[in-house]
Image 1 (tube, one colour):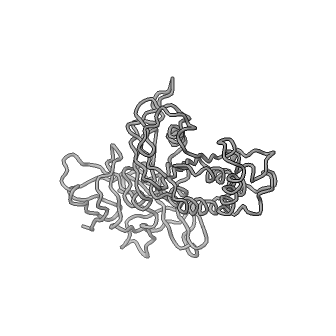
Image 2 (tube, rainbow, N blue to C red; image 1 turned 45 degrees about the vertical axis):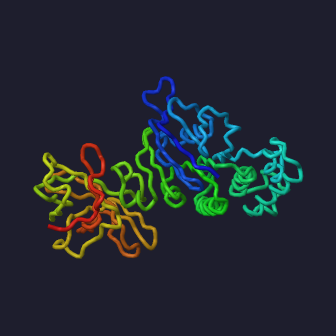
Length: 371
């Protein structure tokens, strides 16, 4: 096990108009499960590859267990990687695949078999040791790939989209398996995914990247409740947070038929004429009448999931403003249909406020009170 640190790390590719990773500072605790998440091209896999020694660091340094490994060969970093592609040797049995890395390292045959059998028990592969990869399911192959990493007893596991090739149901199962395994072993793990649901359900902490820049690193709950900017707010959560601009008047903002008071620290700021408001789907609801509602929303799509439904629609912040997009979570057994015009109310205690020009969060206090 080992702590990992990135210090002012850059990665530049010749001819690129920006750094693939820019000024990354990130500390990962010993035994922590950290997830790197973001859209394609955000730099998460490049970050992992620099940590593994497969990509050159242009500037800055990386340390593992207190040792600077920036210029150290991958084989000397004592890390184990699990990829999206299982990369199993098709002519070898499961046991031989598990033992192969140890064999190359010169470990005795008896010790190799002992470690392979221990890993097989841990991963539920006991009955499959004499099978070859073509005789295994996708989930079983991924377990073997993980087993190869486990038998090495490395300082850290690096996992690059390891579940992407699995179907939806198996992915959910394997998420639980990976979380259980890494927690049981206590090995520092850095896990890359583009799936924010996967990130939120697996990581002790989650690091969100965009265009090579670290946006926020926090626990899943903190990311959801206090996103640092509109990018994180829109990326974390499924469906994503509704974000829209609203004009500021004196100490409050107009939201449809109501006025909402801004937090005290935002009142009286000179030049603050517009603010970006964020609201999660669960903080919006359909009202029994217009008297208690904020907006009249025209439903444009319905996502019925059984016990709950997500209703997508448009509304206006002010009579003369452009329509905004809203998502409402509601009862899946009884909900409006596409084309309906329904009154919507919101929970004023859970609004998020962002700078309309920069997208940065303006207040850590998400509690507001009605005027």
